[in-house]
Length: 323
Image (cartoon, rainbow, N blue to C red):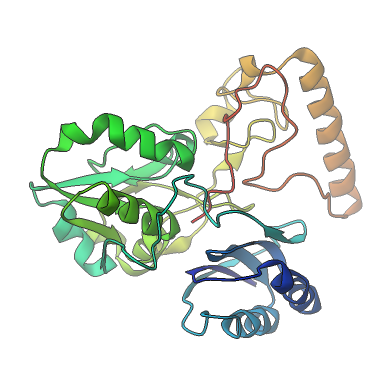
């Protein structure tokens, strides 16, 4: 069984580029794969590997400037959920695209998972899911507002267009692992909202700590790796991932006439040309051949965008809005 660690930390990195090569080397030395983003505002990533490898990488990260107190969430996977290890340099570790939003300066009040139910059932509280529409479609908290965004970058404009709906009510926000709420709650405070809260550790921590019998969560929580989605106790839910549009699908979707493994799902059948689908079929054939040989196939990973067809919407599927 492999260990999966999801982590982030907002802390100033004056020169993130100088951190990249040593961090990548530490991951490779420990047999660790996954994706880590570095930016001037900090670090964000999900990695998987053997226990000793994960421990070595976490020790390396804790030695980075401002990361001594970094927290992370762990789960397990029966097989490696990533094809390779990537450490990338970005402008933001989670892309919102709003200047001056700084979670190290102002952020919403953290709410422990054990206290979350009491908060979100208060009639004076509006509960907002900050994740993207394809994530919300497979699971969310009962009664939460779905912004219907295709990308986290769309959240600020959605809020500005809808803020008047919520009056002066308190706002509780949540996301998969907490990082998007660090920015979205900071943004709402900047916009003048008086009381903003967010779920500490995100949905993943809630699913880990709150018993299913007491839970207000419904469905699965999308994760940006080959597990696709997890539920209570962080067990894998069985959702699949469309290799064309990178959206999760259910068993019912698999039975739909528009579903073709590796080629299309009901959400994207009309978004690609026949030439695109021919390319996807060839890719799927190569995957099947690799599986038959027992060899890994290093194609696009979960949560990554495949090469897009002209007919595909620019923001049709998962981006690296992880956590």
